[in-house]
Image (cartoon, rainbow, N blue to C red):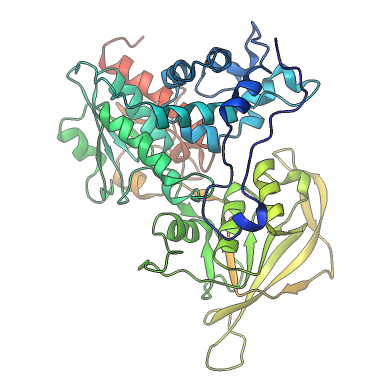
Length: 472
């Protein structure tokens, strides 16, 4: 019998005042009993609207039906047919705007907790299955993948399953891209990422770290080494700043730098060789998921007050609802309809304001109100005259977006990019260079993990068609 409860089974979590002071995972995951109960809420619709909302086209009703039957390994096999990173997606994918937004149960209540069930299944498999992955028969073709983030790992995994010899070139010393440097441990434990990467290695994927394509090797040199196609999934790691006075002060970070120091370099540990400021009052400028991650990380590093400074209202806040709720529960303070105009600082040696040298002592903001919608459909914020105020802080983290790193485009002749630095591709992920494909944030700018994975799948299929002689 279906479970007609209008609400999802709640996700168990650490208590807010406990988790705000540790880096352990916040969400604890479903028990078997909770997973079975949630799976019973699925109506197994014949039209499967949820599948249409999934960028990697997971057969959602089929995997949930296996959960309902108690066949958790069978459910995992269905997930693995479409997703190379199910344990990751179950944690960080914005299901509420994708598959769950299409769920029929959401019409008169809450949709089925698809992401929570995906996480449960992947975690159950990782805990209980010791089976090694069978390598497919090699097909004699070689493909290079630049970047080991979600798009690169997905492309590599899909090609490896078809017998391609795939090498992933990663600029950093660990594989995982944004999954290891950008998303905090308390949202995505790095052991999960390592497990997913290990599964790809078992398929035969080689991963070369400390390889900066454009410096260590160029795209042209990869072709000279015998690779027949190249997929560029190098992400969007170039941070943006506002261009306001004081951004060069000590204590001003981009969210990328702040999170990389904490997530990848473990700067919060006593023995870490990577410095990071343990500030007492922190302002995070921006309202996306990265801003929430930075704010919650600052709390865990010992900040007494952490502010989200965002120029629109809560309704326009782009971060996931769950992340905003967790941040509020943990004590992050939201200063909405506010926009910074200057970061204040003083020299260490004299009591004199100096926006170019010294340490952060505050951030000057103006209050905003919402005017007419902009090109994206969101109401544009308009400054309220004579509304300036100063917020006393000793650290400012800029989280207003990122752009693709220009290194690859500047070292690859004939690679077309758009005005924002994104690599231009066609519907199959093919760039302006023959046999050079791209996807994920390197094309779109900063977006979601699952959209990057979808781009990796599209490109893998196109590469396979091109190299196997099946192109139209």
